Image (cartoon, helix red, strand yellow):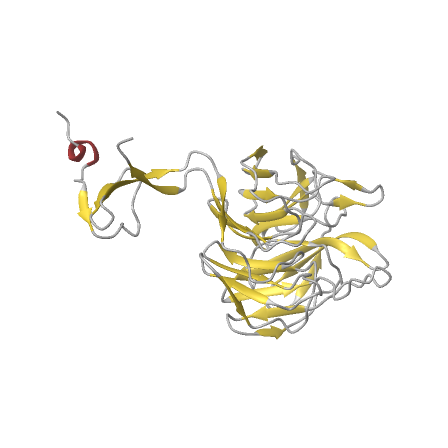
Length: 333
């Protein structure tokens, strides 16, 4: 009879705690819980509920990865400067931004992030956009050089605190723009506009040389769109559309592997789509239907949090993409 060791090259180990980095196909017996476990790979991407944020809100900025994420600002009400840190299990309130803003964007990681744009007023008669830009060092926020164009409801790459893109959005009186600016760690520089001016958009990307913008709303005519554009460091190029046109979706990932989730179709939606660099494919839906969410991480291990539908939400969901590692427990049933 062929043994497990002959097939896999290793024995089934007896261990008191689960391995910290098991490989696919590895099997072990946990002597503490008295169960047999093995490492598999997920067949389909899906969302799982995590612990709530401390402050329910919408229109917040975000940065980081699934196990070390930031959520900052937003509308609670009122408009807040509150910043929270997620360690993969729980959210903890940390030091506030200097200027409370709603409908802003962020870029970077937990120890090195920036927060830019947004608005500090909810008065429809005073639709003011902001040029404010703040840098976070893991402890405190510091004001740094402003954007060139004041705006809110804009999009951005996830980038870093030294290389990011801000694009599109809404400016007074109001006007819808396709303006694109690059951040180099010191200053913002205006570059080529998006092909389609729009706001209430989302995006993905790792730095200022590659990016993706999707969804949003044009005006006029007032309409939700499925338009997707790709940034190559110099120009925007229209690529294949989302399957579901929507405004205010959440977004995460890179220009070649991105996730669009939630948003507003007419009513809010929980639809999730995966971008593979060429096309969008429908995935398992969010558990909680929402729009104006924060997003962090990658299409392998991602995070979606907060938002509204239409009530404000503090819900957090963790995304595990197809092919990610998954520990399973074997039973005799």
